[in-house]
Length: 117
Image (cartoon, rainbow, N blue to C red; front, side, top):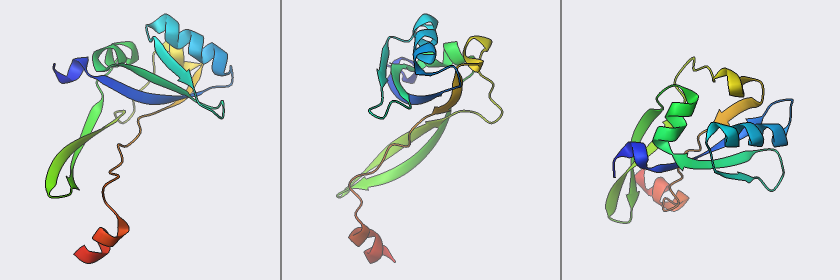
């Protein structure tokens, strides 16, 4: 499977029209997996990368970094919106912000970080 077909997750902070309107517009844009956060302030969307890029109208930027898991090293790719990206008109008035979370590295402890200094 190529990168375009992989599922990605991102958060949507709704605009002044509210959570319900943002969720309805996202569903009508083609997103099916949408969950409300427990605090009711955000929506979490899970969708194939190609669908996200097609709906938003631009390609997502990738930031690659390496992280260590024990003795193994892995490559982590964090996604973000390109500088100056503008949402499509159907989403502009209902979406205040789109956040692509950074994938955390749970295996690095503060003890390991201190030893490297």
